[in-house]
Length: 291
Image 1 (cartoon, helix red, strand yellow):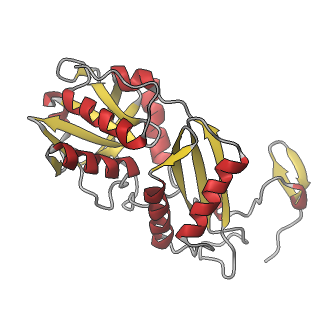
Image 2: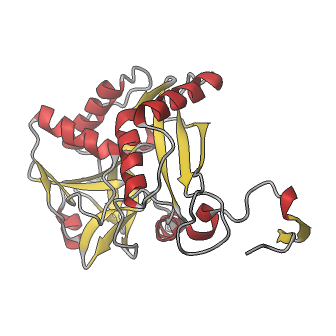
């Protein structure tokens, strides 16, 4: 099934051989792909093993056959930093799609995945982590396989944009009144010295920083209860915070224009921030751990 040669791109017509991107690309046409965002501090990866493991888990979940093993992709990612002479704070975005093939809903046969990764500078958001951020609540309208880090992110994008338009940093998503996660991060509630967060079902992404938070709570003997909390519980929370590779551990001090407790980052959030910095070996621009 061939395609006619002249393609409309932007407001111009051109031969498809001259396009700068493969127009019959399954990531572009179906969102048929996966991705990872990996944090870098001082030119070193943080939680790389966790990200690579999740990459393979996502690929397996949507039946993409990767052309390398975990050791090989790890070596390639380190080589990427070396070739870019990366020695500052940043991130790597890595995307893998099923490949380029004539458009058809069923998987193409004998097609190699399209793979790319690039490095960007990513300074730490010291202001947000020190002072806290604001959030809104937003209905979770995503699909039922959120544990896959797929390219199907339009509901997340719309929720994040709504948060921005309301002067907020994040959108806290909920299904039937139960908080799941945020548009691009995991979220937690602290009440009476205990941390509550949604269990790692198919309805949320098991974040790599969340995995680190789980380790930190064990080391600090802070109870972590994997139990969904209600939207109504937010107003009586002692602390709310979020975690992600780019946001690290960030306190949320206001939700839907309602202040959380005294409106300041709480003690447990500060303890986890300190544990994160020690684990990531971040020696500069430390957060002031005062409550």
